Amino acid sequence: MISDQDVQAYKRDGVILVPDVLGADKLAEVRAVIAELVAGSAKTLEHTDIYDLEPGHTPEKPRVRRIKAPQKVHPLFDEIVRSAPVLDILTKLIGPNLRLHGSKLNMKSAQYGSPVEWHQDWAFYPHTNDDILAIGVLLDDCDLSNGPMLVTPGTHTGEVWNHHGDDGCFAGLIDPDLIKNEIERAVPCIGRAGSMSFHHVRALHGSAMNTSDRSRNLLLYEVAASDAWPLMGVKDFAEFNSRLLTGDPVVAPRMTNVPVRMPLPPAIRQGSIYETQSAAKKSYFTRAA
Image (cartoon, rainbow, N blue to C red; front, side):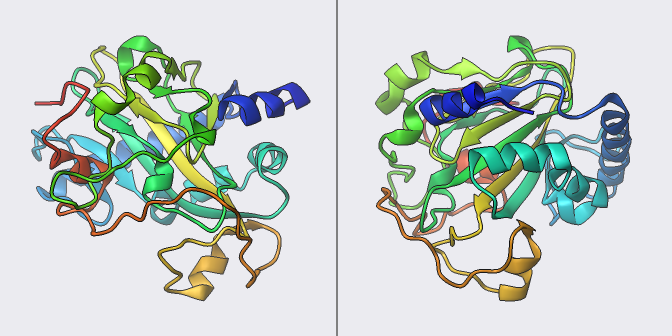
């Protein structure tokens, strides 16, 4: 699926976009599942273990901004990340032994899909090494108008910015005044539905509100080398190993000299990045009403 040049581009920039990884039939399956899940959100007015809701959500007009851990909600999402084309790409970018750290489905509906402020994934889940990336599966055609993910090339080899608020608690975002130059250099991950982006866990990224009349659904997987262990600990070793994509369980974490800031004290508002970031006094992107 990718060439040696693609691998070198990932090492240099910390992000690549691979077109047409997911075929039309699989896209149709995913969209049908999503439609069922969104319809099911009409039964709740509060965030749940499955749903993170948009402002303005009602049973009559369901608005979902995130499906949490979709690989646990429907087997199709687990099937996608374990598919041969995806594993082929991951093996070339990270190595042969892989673990799924987590997943989420960020949904930006037409005209109001919520933004995600500038951040590094590494700030949320530091590990013993940073052979970790996120896959972004474009489930809709994505252009500049419907809130694409923006990534700043080269930031995966630099500093880990402060993601804490004035109160000292984890805020899940970076003060945009500190990264003006990096924001100006950001590039959009745009392409046809079925394409996939791969960005390094330390790459700076964010996304604006969807101002178009089209949806922008992005299925995200976080994948780590199996010898990268979360510094916040492993609560259930059996569950930890159940997320192996390739290779055997390991009990010897690989330690590398990478910069780390722990996401502690925890955010006052938790549940998703949207909730965590909502407590911040300063934002870069226009927020959904």
